[in-house]
Length: 179
Image (cartoon, rainbow, N blue to C red; front, side, top):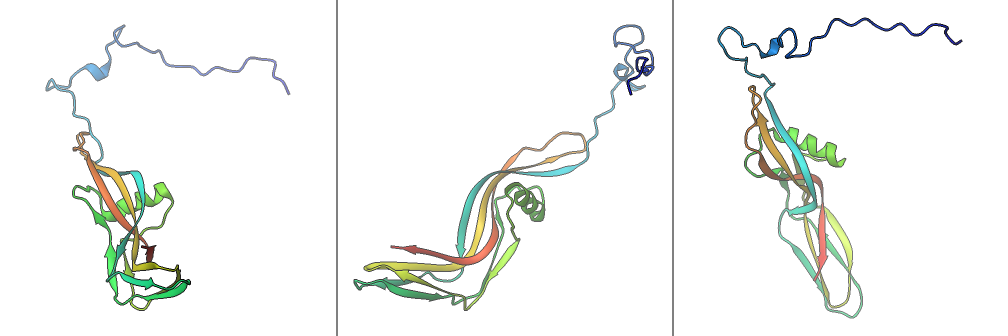
């Protein structure tokens, strides 16, 4: 149904442009002659900036197997130690490690941990080409990330921004390569 009258317009109070008529109340200093200081919520900030991919942190010694034959051989590697690998962060992080991890997970859609344990007895078998050495290192894959960390104080001033590099555990596994 189409109306026959124009829509009712809301009434507005009389507006005053600063400098015309009444002064802008915000420009009048209170009785001490100073404007009140701004107020902000105190906040520790971390912002991830760049994902530098997965990096491996080994637990125990590198294992190697040389295939001196003219045929492909099967190499089996077994982890010989257990070890924990945790987050590594450069100095200057203003937030908690958990808060930093949460920001990185949200930005890159990954699952990270504060620490993971690489356990004794895990094994992997791979083909080693002729006249080649297969190398294996058991440990934890970590995400390398760079970001910025700083604090916003209650007076709305910010601290100096610090560039932060972190390595956050993603998963336990082998790093394999040939030489």
